Length: 366
Ligand SMILES: [Zn+2]
Image 1 (cartoon, rainbow, N blue to C red):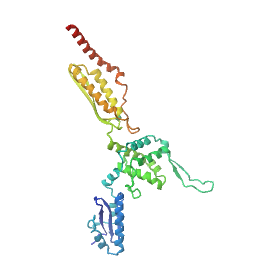
Image 2 (image 1 turned 30 degrees about the vertical axis):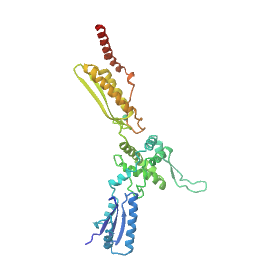
Image 3 (image 1 turned 60 degrees about the vertical axis):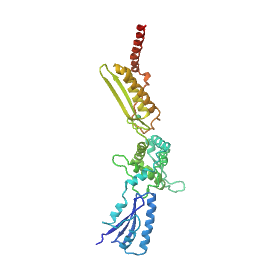
Image 4 (image 1 turned 180 degrees about the horizontal axis):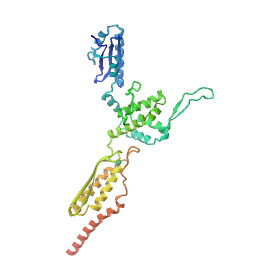
């Protein structure tokens, strides 16, 4: 006995399922169900299939025969049984990892300027910008009631405009078909959902005014920008281990402490931004300058070596631009330069001592 519904999956050349042809034997219908998450290419192929289905239907073949005939086309397989129309509906709403990857591939990580603009625009937002006011809704002099409309502030609109620059607004997300992004309970939006949200806001606002306001109030707006900036940071740069800012470079700074009978080595390593890197350099170098000398090995070998290594390393950190505003946590305060730290001058003691010894040695030799 036939199941109430049978379907065939239709694949694009790359293996992506673009939709389903399905026969409902009880209702006597043959239909095309486009998978909602497909991009532009998948949607075009779906339109072709929608046409094929309409054509076969017109010829008035029995449903099972029509489905079998379509199942002979390239990119399809034999008909599969399903429990009902809802089962096909559910299949059509599936979002795959390939769908997410296709959206993430639209982000233009090479365009540093556009990402900086997004970060700057977002950092400049105030609570007042988030409190969107609405105009209209009242009768004007001619007795015409104007439809209410949102009055977005310039800074808020600047963020929306910046979404285009980074490639987050894309036809590859068909926002009218869904799936609509929602903010999970932990507030962290998947970056692919951030691209969906960006497209929905930037394009959807033109069709349905107030879309951006709704997203600001629901938290989708903030979650979207944060997810996009985080995604870019992970893709394009290393992130500072102390403050999460970028750009950052992987570095290691050392401190050395020479004791009469023992020596201690300290190390701080990981990606560091310009500010935190400089702070760690100054702290560990100053520590070495006052604690580094107090054993013979330390004096002639480890302390100088540590100082030179730190000097070379700090060059890498100093070459970095300062971290993008608004995108980092608490940073290490670089503090005073080393030459303004009194403890650093303890290093003069062993230097003077060496000088004293060689001068007295020379004197006694002469
Ligand atoms: Zn940092």
